[in-house]
Image (cartoon, rainbow, N blue to C red; front, side, top):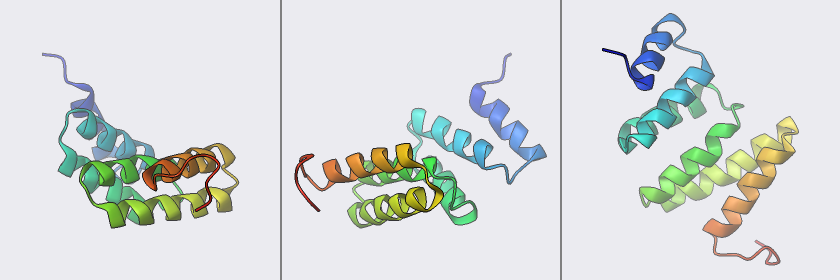
Length: 112
C-alpha cells in the first residue's frame, strides 16, 4: 500500500519536527482533507514558532473565516501584512491586503 502524501509528510516531520515547510505542508493537507481543526492546529503552531513564515498568514486567516472566527481572521490578516512588509515580501503583502479588503467588504478603491 502506498502511503498518502499526508502520511509521507508526517513521517518526514519525525526527522525534522521544526521544519516550517513541513508544518505548513501538513496543515495544507489536513485542510484539503477537510480536517479543519487539525489544519488549524498546525497553522497556529507555525505562526507561534515561525512568525516570519509569511505564507501562513493568508491560509490561516482564510481558515479562520471558514470557521467563523472573524476577530482571529482580522488580526491574522493585519499581522501578516505587517510581517510581509517587514520582510520586504511585496507579493505576499499584496495578496494579504487584497484578501483583507475582501474580508472587510471593501472594493479596491475603498480605504480601510
